[in-house]
Length: 92
Length: 159
Length: 135
Image 1 (cartoon, helix red, strand yellow):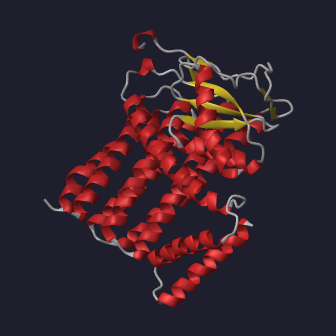
Image 2 (cartoon, helix red, strand yellow; image 1 turned 180 degrees about the vertical axis):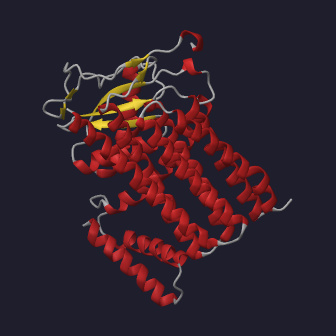
Image 3 (cartoon, chains in turn green, brown, yellow; image 1 turned 60 degrees about the vertical axis):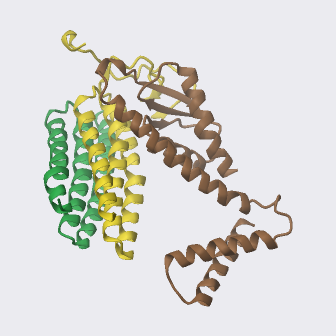
């Protein structure tokens, strides 16, 4: 059993299942903070999937995209948190 | 004093690299360790010098932090498979002994990357930290444990 | 030998990510979700990235992977902290299982400051009661 087969048939389904579970929370989430944190988690899991694909196809260039995703995840979370606080101040 | 010794250490490591002629990371780390030993030998009174205690302290703190992260991650993994009613989360007020902004940032980041605790806010007069914990049965004991396990180590490192 | 280490590291990392997703669905309020998920996801992701580091075994890949691990480890907990603070200020509902809440009544919405002594400013998020069937 080669490493590509193991990743294709075991690891990618586990990560896909976690993406589906987090997406359920993203759709159902009662508040905005739930949706923002599940968006953050979705991007982190996307980083994991990109790294797994770079191992399967033996292409280390894909890791640059993982780094880019990490930057975007942090920026998105901080911007949403700032927006939530400012919106509370504007409403009063 | 610390800065001068650190600069001397890096300089000696660079000289080691020039002398051996191979530019790799392992060689730099090896040269850094050798010049650390040389500086340790040639400094007259080591007890008054912070530099020789802060490097081993930093290394032991890193190991301690990794151990705590792995241990409490496994605890959280088990706790997330429990029935829902067994957890008792709480927001605790932890009074601070650390004073400056840098120490507070460092301490709260250590609490943040350890699973089970999440810093929600710092009070405006910098005297208390509001921490959300996953499972808390005894309030006083938990606060005491946080202060003794984590804050003491941070204080040892920064002072 | 090297491939076995890579497989073990990725498996443990993927299991941590799966536990994160399970916790995301099962926990009852926002604060617990933020508290549990940001940390375990960071550790699982770090293990998967470390597996890539062992697999390629080149300097350019190692430095890139280490930079990504350090960046994720520094920023994911900070994002969780900011989000939890924004959620508390916005009065997001808390679960009734949260018995002790020292932060209740400490914010002063008029002057926009947070006290450290015991105050009573009536600033507190509402409690979200369970349905009796799920108790």
